[in-house]
Amino acid sequence: MSRPGVLNFGVLIVVLVFFTLPVALLVLYSLNVRYGSVPSLRAWLYLAGQYRTFGAALVSSLAYGLSAVALVFAACVIPAKAIARSSRSGTAVLEAVLLTPALLPSITFAIGVHQLFIRAGLVDTWLGVLLVLSFVAYPYMLRALIAAYESIDPAYEQCARNLGAGMFQTFRLVELPFLLPGAAAGGSVVFLVAFSDYFLVFLIGGGIVPAYTSYLVPFIRSADYSIASALSIVFLLVPIALFVAQDRLLTLVLRGRGMAV
Amino acid sequence: MPPTYAVLGVLSNSREELVITIFFCYLSTRMQVSIQGLSKSFGRTPVLSDFSLEVADGEFISVLGPSGVGKTTLLRILAGLDTAAAGVVRFDGFAPAGGNEAVLVFQDYVLFPFLTVYRNVAFGLEARRLSKHLIADRVGRLLSHFGLSEQAGRYPAQLSGGQKQRVALARALAVAPKLLLLDEPLANLDKNLKRDTALYLRSVQREFGITTICVTHDQDEAMAISDRIAVMLGGRIAQVGTPQSVYFRPVSPGVARFMGPVSNLPESQITGGVIARADTADICLLRPEQLRVRKQLSGAFQVQDVRLLGSYQLCVVTLNGVRYEAFTSQPVPLQLGDRVEFERVIPPFEEEYVYEASS
Image 1 (cartoon, rainbow over the protein chains, first blue to last red):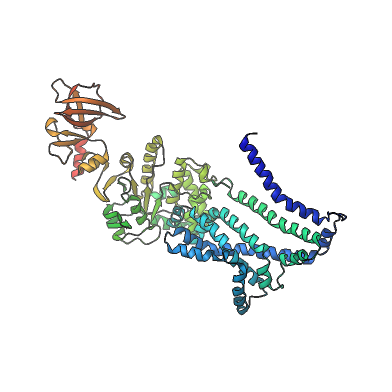
Image 2 (image 1 turned 135 degrees about the vertical axis):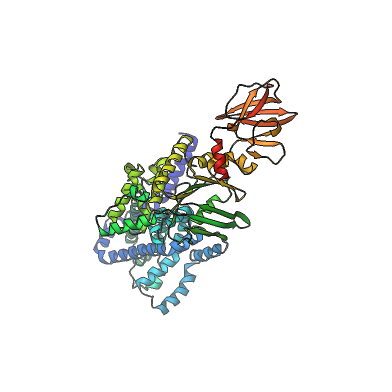
């Protein structure tokens, strides 16, 4: 093996160890494999027994996570296009304003939103949780879609318009396929931010909106590492499964159409 | 019967089809275009200044000029994709209605990469919400007319350059525009394909009988496809005329040089007339077809260099220490130091062009 080959291989091993070691530890903990303990399936059996509350929390988190992706995508398309197509310096300011949610500490911002949502009657509702998460995750999708729009030749839109197409037909048939890879990248981050959020969901959902993180945290605080580890493994598997599904879907949709996937 | 009938055919299986077919045939009648005093600048750089042009019904006119003289901007304004700072465009005497009376075929075709050839051609018809079977019928006819039936299910990335261009043309003609705008239609094709495509474009334009404005920077291309050529130099039209008249009867040395190789030789040393006078007195401009070189011991010119440049020969000569370049279409074996004389020949077809130009 050549020298760069060895180097690459070494880096790969380090990265693999870095990522797999915590997961391996989680698996061992969930099976109660520890010094002085007897390995058992107790944690997994407990979760199986609690499948109703556990499942409800998981489904609720999945629902607001995926809804946030859809909502944020819909809310980002027009501003992203406007920013990507404009060369004026004013849009840089607009872009900076739209990106601020990612820069603010969520606690600072949550206090204000909390007050606002109490007045609007959105506190303790599923919609409130969806809105606050969408707001926080907005910049990640915006950034991705701006980059995607910048890569689309404006001639496509002009050609579609010249052929008599309306905005919606142009978007659906011409622009959307170009946006998909960018939207997938942005959507992954949006989903992760929403799905893994604890503080905002707790604050706005008030413990009434079921959430996987709200279910998980008490177990982490308790001394029962086995159940917390089992829950964490499930927590990890959900996004991985979604990423794989998303990747397959994108390849299926875009394959053979002159687009590198 | 308008030519479009012949290509797209008339189907009257249902009332809807009949009405729509009549509608499209009405739309596809040809159009006269009048452009007056069009101006446009980007920032402080003027790209079009006081551009005027009249285009007749069913005419194929090329706007020919070097890069950066605002040719594409002109097409974009006519297609409704850009606005002019000043000037008026009239389609059949009326201001453009905002529909797609004028459809632009982009230089790099701009086929939608995620749609099949079929869906690309159907795009403009889908925008008009025509029924599925009507779209299928019309697109099917166009694809077979352009020899693309077998490629109907392919994506643009899987097509050759020539096929892409035919798809772009079919897509534009599917919506039966009154005016077809072509932006450098042959620029992306290799040299051998260019000539065939030029003739093909011309035959398609004749068949559909559609008024066409083409912009190009390629003189051969313009001459091969156009009824008339508008030569654009410095943001303005320098001359409008048939390919023969702008080539053989240029109105200025600038047009003469832009349209092809010209020899500048002292008139007093040449027998015969001139096609255009250069700024300097006694210098005349002649096309290779109008000039013959002959080896002659008593010749006034002395050969300094001889090159064969494809279809013509370049002969660098001196007379009293002054250097001249002479292009002739009939190559003659010459050697350095030979003495030569030049004779002006009148091509047998030239009188015809003189007549056209003066009329």
